[in-house]
Image (cartoon, rainbow, N blue to C red; front, top):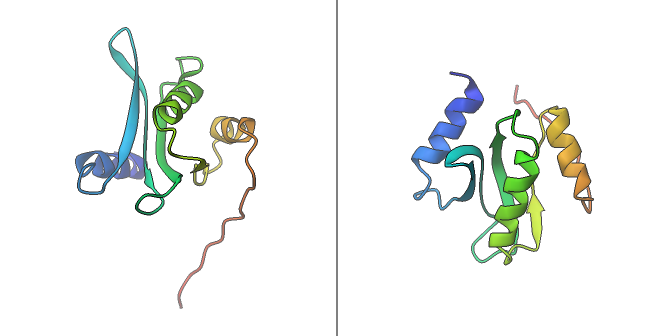
Length: 111
C-alpha cells in the first residue's frame, strides 16, 4: 500500500473523531470520486481539502465531486486545496477555479 493510500485510509477510518467532512460521487451506484476536508477552525468560512480522489477513466469526476461538495456546503466562502504534489491534472483543476492566490511551499529540516 502506498503512503498516500495509508493516509487516506487513516482519514477515512477516523473520519468522525477528526471532525472531517466529505463527499462521494457515484455513477450508476459505483463510487468513482470522493473528497475529504475540514473547516480551517471551528465555524470557519474556509474549507481545507485534504484528499481528492477520482477514477481517471471517468471524465470530469474530479471537478464534479469538488463542485457538488461545495454546492452542498455553501457556508464555505474560501477553499484551500493544499499542495497538488506535481499532479498536472489536479494543478490544472485548481487553476481552473481562478484562485485568489497561490502560496509557495517550503521544506524545513532540523539538524
